[in-house]
Length: 207
Image 1 (cartoon, helix red, strand yellow):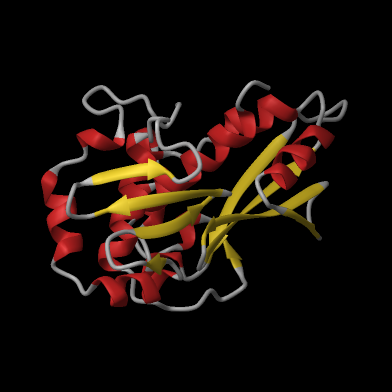
Image 2: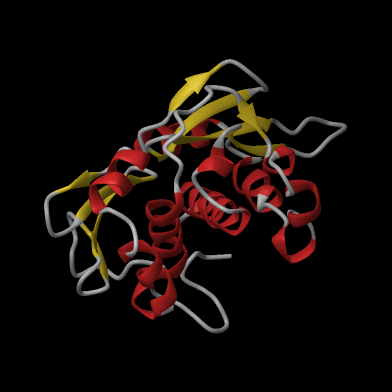
């Protein structure tokens, strides 16, 4: 699913006011420090999967810092506001977990909330090396594991991972999306799903 597509909401300017209210209840400096963002006195700058976003709480506006006229997806907005409002500031563990391993994840990431690993594998089954180029373009790096293993920037304290096994005569290509094992200190499970959706969409865009 494209991160801008939702039956009720499409863009970040349609995010419910309650999420903005949650952010305004928190010290702005504390919110920035908790996630590794920058607060300039009026707005936050937060990197998300290789793109810097500007979040203006007073005007309830989220923009792409380098392309302020470019619309920001609803899911990107939810991830940014949720982590700013609720992150506990825990540093990353450096250990990958699949989202199902996070507290409550086994029940949550099923059905409509299943991770988009199938589309990811299908997108790169004929040209797995293209995944490396796409990931590096987002600021990712190659690590050990699977046939191709990538660590990609999610949020400053929440790295993401992609593992891909190439197809062969017996099996189709298979993919796993991982996240830092302490991601639940920065996002709720819906935010984790949105973050992984964004990564898959950006990797697969125009494949």
